[in-house]
Image (cartoon, rainbow, N blue to C red; front, side, top):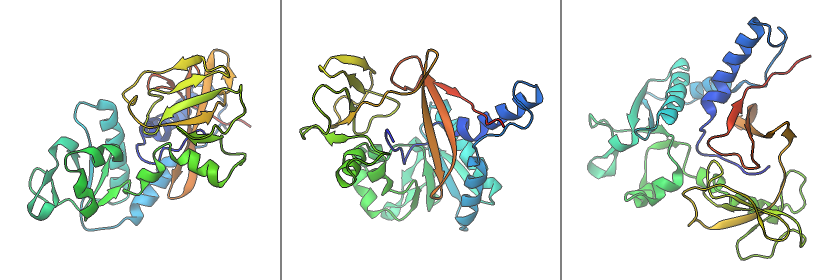
Length: 274
């Protein structure tokens, strides 16, 4: 496991819907075998889980303005919720308000009791109204405790408790003793980096092998043993595994011509033959 994103599902639309649509079209056109399958039960699991979150209160779905990709992802999740029987409403983050007593409200001053936000938890905490999160009464998806899992500081902690585990990479916080032998390659990552932002790969002599720019250079850093991604032709391949309601239910594949997976990396649909 390179890292764990428990907060912002930004490639959900592609993983759950578009690659399944590609599978059906590719089977019909003969590009792939007609009996080809796909490891993808994401949408079914989402609808099933939404059906268990019953409430008479509407479920709000929100993201920032001027982010078409995020809006598409949020509208997809909203559609899944409606298929599960939920009453839903869409609102932009910038349109959220605070009513009497600090309650969260929409543009019509309706109190928001539960909401999904495609907006990083650490941004919420750093906003001007961040201190109010300690007194929130509404239900957030993802919940606030996911901020513990959605930052890369989790990786050194896991390595500390489970050193040598085959599913983990040696990881340590900035200022700690390196958990790899001298001369081995390693990676530096900001704790709250996304899409490869400000991630740097070093060789065993501390020379920069690859680097991605971003907005996270001032964040605290962790270090991690370098694990090269599998290479097929000119593409380095990364698998993202999806978990819904504590169960693995699908995957999305990203490829790039560099060692780092970024927001410009290609999403590649997959199929299973035989």
